[in-house]
Every structure is written in structure tokens, then in C-alpha cells.
Length: 275
Image (tube, rainbow, N blue to C red):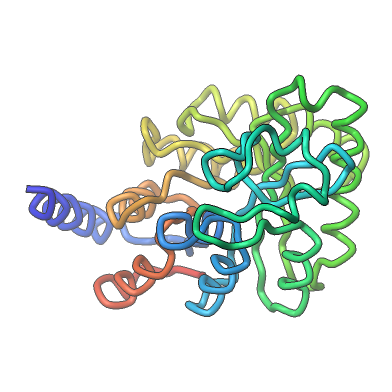
């Protein structure tokens, strides 16, 4: 039944998509390096996605107790590593002793930036994981934002587009106030709609990262008319990709970068995708 459902959805989306026509290119990027195919946010994941042809990536950054920036999504170490407790309560030395559940070392921001530094045509989202707020009060938030921005921009290739993203508007506002011209994206668990479009316009952020659930083609078109760039999530399947493409998004993440790229190239090569 699942295969039949996938087939019917894809056929329907293909027909609708061809009827409307594709008017713009989709930038597809590897979410946490491809978290459903590889060990998320590890060098193994980013290397594998790059080897598969991706120059678009998303990653998550947290800060240790002694001020080191670590590539990891959760504050708690339990889900992905053999450690316990909050990342923010560990030192760099503590983190260096840990392994992921799949046996990889945890990755520091400096290591990821070194890996990216000689790559061409990059699009990278650095998600500022500054929640819970209790772990990032204002002074610590400022330290985090300053360190992240300066480290990232110091090693940014000339042709790269590096975007700082967050669902925590405090972090976005700090960068906006202190580093004019910074590329920002507001992440929301809501769809692209009148409310989220208005929010981006009000706070002066031109990139909206919204959920596909509840998003319509008309709302994406409205966002474009308002000068916004729309990135949609989640990206866990072929179905998600086809829906995002039909909705007309500019950017889309994927948790299955390798298998999805192969499927696109084999089944829908006429869709304009940049990896």
C-alpha cells in the first residue's frame, strides 16, 4: 500500500507540476549531512554528501561550557552519542572523548569550516541552536553569536553563500544589529502563510524556512511578491521533494541526499535542481 500511495502521489504531483510549469531552480541541500542516510552532523556525513555531488549543506551549532563551538543538533548528548547531559555543560576536552552511536567522533565547527574552505559553489546554513534560553542568557548569547559569525566568515570561500538560521529570534536579532548585511533565515514550525510572511517583513529578514504542511502555491507566490526567499521542510522522502517542488519553493533540505539525487536524475531530470 505504501508503494502504491507513493506512486499515486508522485504521478499526481508530476502531472500538476508539468501543467503549471517550473519557473525557477530549486536549491537542494543536505540536512545535517543527510541524517537518514549517514551519521548526522559528522565529517562522514558531509563528506559522503559532497562526494555524491552536493555543495549545499545544513548544520547545527552549539557552544560548550568553555566556549568551543560544536556541530550537533541536540543540547542533550544521549540521542546521538555515548555521553550524558547537555553539550553546554561539557568542556572541549569532554567532547573530544565522546563518540557518536555509530562510532564517529564529534565534529567541531573549525573542522567543518576547514573541510568546506576549498569547495566551490557552496550554500551552507548554520543553524544557531541557542535554545533552551536558560543555557544562552544574553551575555552568553552574544559570545556565541560573535564567535560563530567571525569564525564562519573568516573561512568563507569567496563564491559561497553562508546563511545563519534560527528559530530563536534573539540570535537573529543580535546578528542583524551587529553585522549589517548578514544573510539570515527565520525558521518556523508554521507554514508559509500570511502570518509568517508578515513576520519576516516586520523583522526585516528576507529568508523564510517554513514547514510544507499547510503551505500553498499561492502563499509561496505571495512571499515571492513580497521579496522573500522560501525554504521548505521537512525533506524525508521523494514525496516531500515533489510536494516542495510543486509548491514553488526556492530552497529545500533533504535527509536522504544520495538516494533522492539519484531518483531525481533518473525519474524527473527536467526539474531544475542545484545541489
